[in-house]
Length: 332
Figure 1: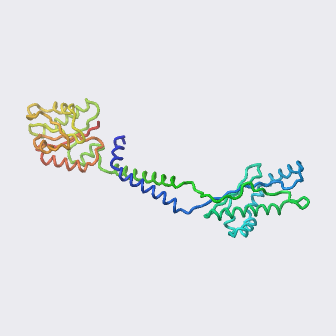
Figure 2: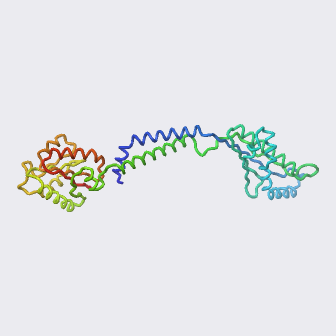
Figure 3: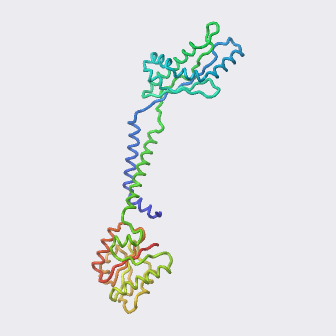
């Protein structure tokens, strides 16, 4: 498909493309607005040495022990016991409390907490209760020195108010919907273009216009002359003396085309107006010119659309022209 084909496709389908783009944008925005919202609250804690009486060696040993046992602390954070205690403190079900995520980095004692829910205040409350229950469980299970727990939990960042958890913003959702609408409209227009009647080859023109297609006009002048020789012989055999009418479908024929065709006719059969006259399909007096012409030759551009309308115009010319009406396919 050439650039001109794309341009014509856009010109003919701009209304559908614009409408589908607008509808897609509205649907995308409304879809984002009515979709169930999910909010995510986050917190950060550290499992630390709680009581070492200021001894550096003891602090180091406890910290190393904590690093080694961090997988157990993560399991404790997600345990049913912690969820049960958090449920009592927050008034939420254990299932809601249990729907949280805890992660840590290698060789770290920091735990990242995250919980998702449909109410921002509720999810914040649930996560705060979970962190508090975890801290109490760590204290209960910790070894003790003189009755004091050796391991404790520092809350580095308390549970935040739940923020909407979405990959899309309202604007992004609208733009995505607009893009999908535009794409759908483009596919519809392209399918219509591909399945509609167009002059892609001589068979398309013959089938649509129901008239003889005598060849095609390439860029090469020598090859065009061969086509015009065949057209001249065809007209000479099938028409009376007079002036042939060369009709351009989309533009008026060039003087070169007129001269090439005129050179093929027998001089004795030329009319008073010469061997060939040039016209355009949308000329107001085309019917009058065709009525006095020995033959009509249509120059149909390759890729010409709306062949149904061209067929009706061709039949109108056939009704008034006393000689044959034929066509050539213009590749230029």
